[in-house]
Image (cartoon, rainbow, N blue to C red):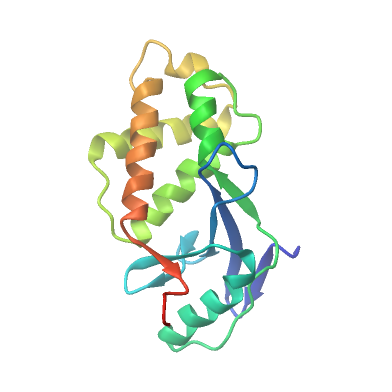
Length: 179
């Protein structure tokens, strides 16, 4: 186990960075994923807990565990993965391969986040994201897969953008002012 994944009792916690701005190489914000029931984010009253600095991860995890009545846990100090939306959108728009599994990581984690926060994804978007994720699980080349078929590039990008918007409607940035 490395310093990007910490196990507490039966749950494992991972620090995850989220990058939206293509003009900056570092994440715009972070969350903590718990490996049960899937790679679900930590939640408070149905909202996904995000924070701006990795140093806030431990306090956010303590807040989450306290509200569940669970003993304190430990969160990693380094991100396990960066969900790079900027790169994923670039790849889907202009490239044909995803060597680093960027798109796959973004899509799979978004689908888990939507489920955890009980956000209903329209069936067409869900199907489009599942199709591209299924394909990328076994094949890094996606250009020919998206060419001349549905979903195409535009449909996958639209589904990805919709899913990100859905996640952000259920976001809570920690710490809250005056908390």
